[in-house]
Length: 191
Length: 335
Image: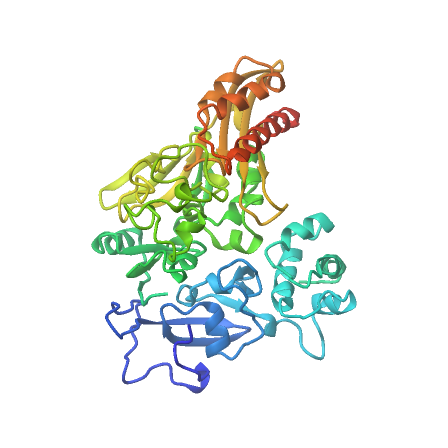
């Protein structure tokens, strides 16, 4: 669903002469060879963005194709695997089933907004310590789901963690290590 | 996904105008967990998405009035309802159904209104390469009836459709006599959840009694003595993040170990959210554990089974018996 724009919004003027913006959140009707667009203003990892995009663009594709934030992974693209999990206003959601247009005025956090290479988030460190990954493709989604699991009170015991982490699949089946990592990090997270 | 127009109305009236004006070609959007999934598959092909996100602040409240009626805003998320202290205390079956539904991410996204209105998981409905699906293409036939059923319904089926209603919450609401507060082009009305979904009959494409543009603004749960002793059992192919093969909600009002009032809801086994008055009647006046199997048999007496759906009857009965036992074992605190 790449809508054809590859420049990050900060380097590309949001308003173009050819396609004037409508500020009221209304798009044009769909007619042959016209793809209705809409402008959405929201914050990602502390940076403000105003992006004009095809109505159909999901948060996942917008993050990856427009903002260059490729840490969030596309697995099934149908809300079944959880690889695309990010936080919207602090809550874990599936970015593949979130229409970017519906994110007006919200705050998004992706894996790029968690920790830093110099100082990893306790959950990232726990995944390393517990060897909670093999191929690593699902790991960004696992980390985002795991942080929400702890914040939302789901890290009570291994059984509770398994339920709270059930929406994020790992085809390498690192599940026992993931559960251990979440319980370990739960005692070290401060936010 | 096909090109689609988009609107962000600020009020229900604006949303309804857009939906009614499009004559069914526009669809309301909130969490997107059903709509975007099916739009990507081109099972649903709306010309316009009417995003209800801006209405959420006014339609997310959960409260109880002086008559004891609990009102749940239609745009409250599944997660919000599941963690609400009022519901955790007063109607444990609603919380249990939501806690076992979908995944944490989906529960953070989906609204109560959208959850109740979710579409079937019938694989022939979800895959447009199948030419026969009366629900998707009226009059085209039914691939499940003609071939292999996969987790299809045994109650409420017709010669045109045997797709099961997949949700966990709506059967609970139906049995508890909850109603939807609905607003549309014709104004406001109340629609019982038990009756919101149409039996497939000859027109499975007509899924609910809602008119184009009608929105569920709230769900109201009336007060009954049985609500506190209400529970939900879900049987599925894995222990988490899976639709029900069979589910059962039981609510009991007991006096001296005998049932004074009972509610029974069944999920995963019927074409619509299913209340079993037959099972309820077998429980009233009886000691519930003694009457459990009798109630389970009564609940499935009308079942229409084939070799590939017969297991649903057995699972449904076991879910109901387990829910009855679980309800009896609940430790209910007095007010």
